[in-house]
Image (tube, rainbow, N blue to C red; front, side, top):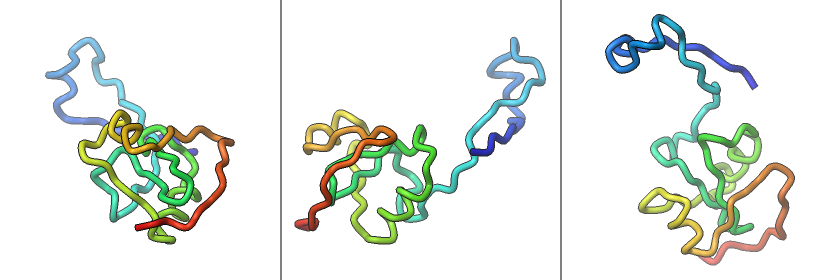
Length: 101
């Protein structure tokens, strides 16, 4: 995992106590189809992935390539849980089933 540092021009206005420090962020490519969503569900396993926190790109790429990804509206963990999805953690595995829809 690579950490990049970026400088936002208006950081001085928003957080004057930071000075000219750079803000870190994790450099992960977002799936094009789901670039505006935070929670991505896998229809086969009923697991939901938090794209802001998830570091393993291979899992996300596999979901998008297989066409079994699902986004939620509103884009919250509560909505994903309401639909029967559980939050994925590294190492958590579930039986893969054929998606119904």
